Image (tube, rainbow, N blue to C red):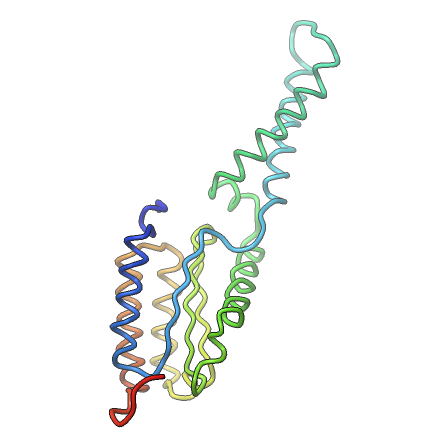
Length: 199
C-alpha cells in the first residue's frame, strides 16, 4: 500500500465522513492515521549491523591485498548505510521486529492519543478513537464508557472486527466503508436527542 492512499485528499475525505457520522449520533469520533507507531531505531541498528558484518566478511575474504586501516572505515560506513536504508523501508522494519512489539507500539500510541487529544474528556463519555498505524498494518479502536454501555455486544464486536480487518490491509475505500457501517451502528444506538444540539 502506498502512502499516497492516505495523503491530504484522503484526510479531507475521512474528515467529511466523520462529519456525516456525527450528524446522526451523540458519539464524538476521532480518526488518527499514523505512518508508524513507536520507535524502530533498534531495527535500524540491527540491519546496519548485519550489513556491516556482511561487508566485513566480504573484505576478509577478498582475493587481493588492501590497507588494513580501510576495514573500520568501510565497516562503519556500511553500518550507517544499512541503518539509513532500514529507516526508509517499512518492509525491513517489519521483518526485523516481532508482531508482539508492533502490536504493543500501536496500542501504546492509541492509548496516549486517547488521553492527550482529550477524547477521554468528551461529554457523557461519548468519545471514540480510531487509530490506524500504516507500518504495523494495525488498527486500534478505543471507545469511552458511554459508548460501550449503549452498544449491543454482538453488533459492536462485528463492527470492530470489520475495522480491525481493514487495519491489516489498509485501503481508503474499505476504510470508509467500515467507518460508515460503524456510523450506522452509532446512529442506531446513540441517536442525537432532537431537543438539544451536540456540544
